[in-house]
Amino acid sequence: MKPQNLLDRLKNDVVIGAEGYLFELERRGYLKAGAYVPEVVLEYPQAVIELHTEFLRAGAEVMVAFTYYGHRAKMRAIGREGDLERLNRDALKLAKTVASKGDALVAGNICNTWEFDPEKPAESEKTVRPMFEEQVQWAKEEGAHFIIAETFNHLGEARLALDVIKKAGLTAMVTFAAKGESTYDNVPWAEACKILEDEGADVVGLNCSRGPETMFGLLEKIRAAVKCYVAAQPVPYHTTHNHPYFQVLEDVHGNRAFPVALDPFLVNRFEMAEFAVKARDLGVNFIGICCGGAPHHVRAMSEALGRTVPASVYSPDLSMHPVLGAQGESKEKYKRHIQDFEKKS
Ligand SMILES: [Zn+2]
Image 1 (cartoon, rainbow, N blue to C red):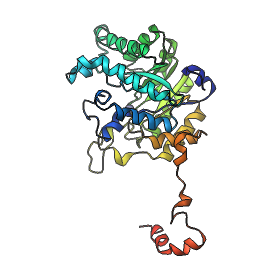
Image 2: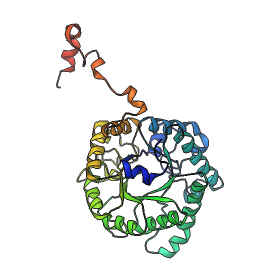
Image 3: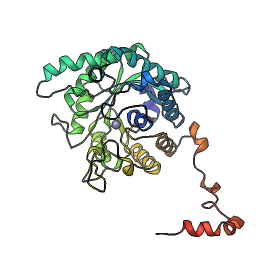
Image 4: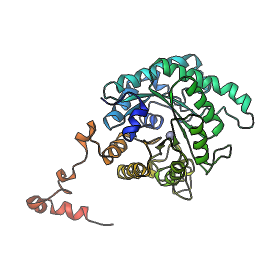
């Protein structure tokens, strides 16, 4: 059995994470795009258990309680503030149930609130701090091993989250969603991560918004700036120099692809596997995936990092494919198919 806390695991090896619950459960028809509130925890807990299980089988070592956007402001916006505590506690319980089946850790999850205004930090704190406090407290009481606080655009809001987690006596992983080169309160990402490290964050880094291609350069700067553990959870989409984050990707007609038409930009399993190796070689310690991620990505990443995971039993073996794996007599037998497979246009 591996150590039951994040820092001991990170000391020994890369820890593999997996997120993207909002996008995947939306694709599966259990969650509404737009408000993106994880009501599925209450309405279809089995669907959440299933996705946790799939990520676990794919090699994820952390089951992240699905409380992303399960905070007071979001629940109020959809008229379900009364279900806030139940949703949070239930999400933790679901994550714990699955984690216990595969030696995974349980992470509580808090995120950007959309309530933080850098022009009014004191006023913002009055709203945001209690939102974080109640979620962190519920996570602690339900037995979370650590807290992932993520997708922050503002350093100010990330610092608040960190402070709440540290005051609760828990391990803190705090990550930003990098669009431009700096936070919305104008601090370059590496510097912002260094500030979080100095204030006690155990793991800092990036999640969401950027795909592997455009996240990597920022990770290099962050790795050079901090001594603590670094996390990287990109979105599996082809973001580019001109479109560095997925909110600005455009389809062939010039229409915005975010958030529900991103399919043609999806990064395949091999590309995510390549990212995992590059990130490990850079010295990134927590490697995962964010919105858009699916179990096949995570399995390929795990295997690229040298692991055999439960779902590896069903990893591809194209030598068994009648055409692609054809040899000897079957090559003759499937001649016509082989010709068609080789057509270039
Ligand atoms: Zn995301």
